[in-house]
Amino acid sequence: MVDRPHRPMALASTPGFPPQAQVTISDDNSTVKAVLPTGESVQVRLYGATVSSWKTATGKDNLWMSEAAVLDGSKAIRGGIPVVFPVFGTAPDKESVAKLPQHGFARISRWEFLGKSTSEGSSSNVKLDFGLSSENLDDNLKSLWPYKFGLLYSVALDPDSLKTTLVVTNQGDEPFEFQTLFHTYFNISDISAINIAGLEDSDYLDKVDSLKTKHQDSSITITSEMDRVYEPPKKSEVPVVISEDGEPRFEIVRDNLDQVVVWNPWTETAAKMADFAPNEGYKNMVCVEPGSLKPWQKLEKGDAFEAAQTIKLV
Ligand code: TA6
Image 1 (cartoon, rainbow, N blue to C red):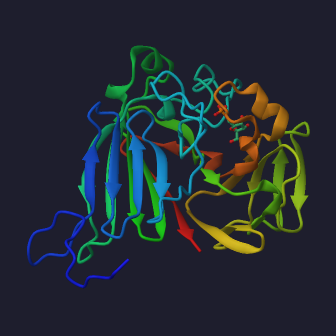
Image 2: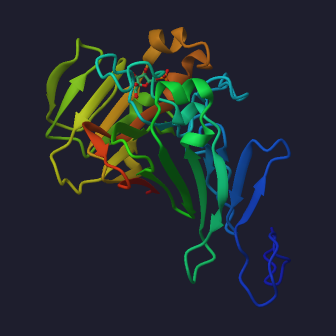
């Protein structure tokens, strides 16, 4: 292609100002999409505020999405970044959340799009804000978790990173407890070529081996079903790095998220999930999920909790 120095801008811009990210809402009001002037994009479904796609300028998606994901708002979306709140998995022994569905209600509720912003002095990034509060919950969920809360979820896109931030506030008189986690499905070429570093020297709970506590000595490779809750040493600043064929691809930096779940369903568990496709799709995904699971966070009236993950392309 001939490079034309004065070629027309692909995106709308005001003369004198650099081009800005373009943010659009789909006609059916289901999805917010942002495209940076440099071509990277992110899509967020209002159902669950689930990031359903995060593409590089070449069009390659960094996130895995099942071909059979249910996108009509009747089931949590199988892929992207579902937000887990206020319980991870189920907790039948914890009365306040015992009746909630698996992974809570944030990923199965419709959020509001609150708007977009850019960092001061920069036109090369965009932040999308979403909100969910007790008022938005359907009556059934409201009765199962009757606390007054506010969730502010921000999805910030830079050319080489995506940051998701969750702020939880207690807007009622009663204290409440919660867990939260970003259930990120990474798109990878081949699970057998993956190596996950940064969780060495961590204890972990092995959910596919009777919840035994084990110790991770070296970096992680995956050769069968894996479902582990890692407990990295406290105050660890070490990022979690997913490499493929020895080349680092994703670097995950955690803020206020003390645990990391690593999940790959492998053949049999993948085949049991009706919304997981293709069957061989487990080879192309790995979930690395920073979360705050232990201890349960407790918010008194008026208090707030903030946590974030930043995923850098390396
Ligand atoms: O985060 C790992 C995990 O809790 C696994 O145990 C596995 O069941 C997965 O999440 C998917 O859960 P889901 O409710 O989306 O089918």
